[in-house]
Length: 253
Ligand code: SF4
Image 1 (cartoon, rainbow, N blue to C red):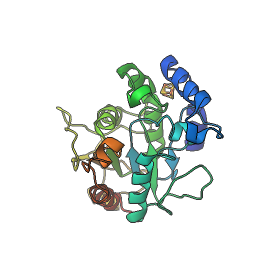
Image 2 (cartoon, rainbow, N blue to C red; image 1 turned 90 degrees about the vertical axis):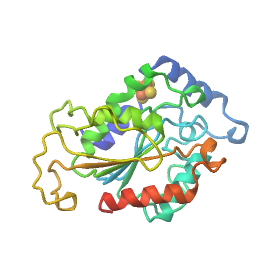
Image 3 (spheres, rainbow, N blue to C red; image 1 turned 45 degrees about the vertical axis):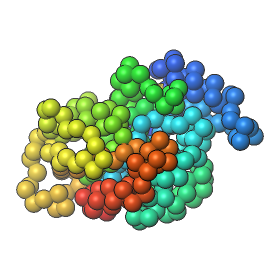
Image 4 (cartoon, rainbow, N blue to C red; image 1 turned 180 degrees about the vertical axis):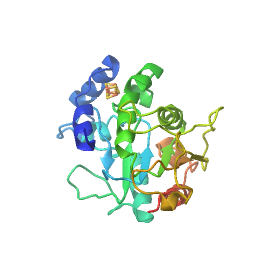
C-alpha cells in the first residue's frame, strides 16, 4: 500500500454512524453561500507531499470547509490562517487554499487529522477518535522513512497523536517512538523529542540519519487555528509562523 491508496481507502470509510449521517446531512443541505456547490461529504484524506518531512496534525474537517472541498483545511477561515502562515515561512506555493485544483503545492509538508469526518460542533466523541486512529497510524507508517517533525494544532490532536506514535506499526515496519510517561503536556510552543523505540541509529544526529533508518521525531504543539483562537488573538499569525519555522528547521526543510 502507498499513500494514494490509503487516501482512496479512507475516503470510503463509513465506520462511524453519527459522523456519516452528519457529513452527509451537511453536504445535502449546504450553507447558503455554497448552495450551488457539490459538497465532498466524505472522509477527508491527508494532503501534501508523499515524502513529507514535516507532518501537521489538526482535529477534524470543518463542516463547510474540508467537508465541502475534500481537502484538509481548505475553504474556511482556519485554513486561511494556516496556509497563509505556511506560505509565509516558505512551505506552501501560495497563501490561499480554495479548492482541489487551485494549484496549491506544499513543500515537504503533509497535513492530516486524527478524525477524518466532520463532527457536529467540531467535537468527535472518544469512540470516534479511537475508531479513526488506525487511519492515522497507517499514514504515519507510510511516512516513517521521511517524517522528522510534527506540528500538532490543538490539544485534541496532541492527545490523539501520542498513543499512535507510541505504538509499533502493525505491519511491522517501524517500532514507533518512545513517548515518556506521564505523557508530555500540550501547550502552545510545547516541544518534545521522541527517540525511536529501537534506538539503533548511528548517533550522528538527526540531520545525518539515513532515510529508512529509525530517527528521532520532533513534536511541536501550537494552539489550533480555529476562529475562537485567531479572532481573539490567542493565536496570532506570528505565533503560528514561529512554530512552523522552528519545526521546519528541525525537519531539515
Ligand atoms: Fe471512518 Fe474516521 Fe470517518 Fe469514522 S471518522 S467514519 S473511522 S474516516
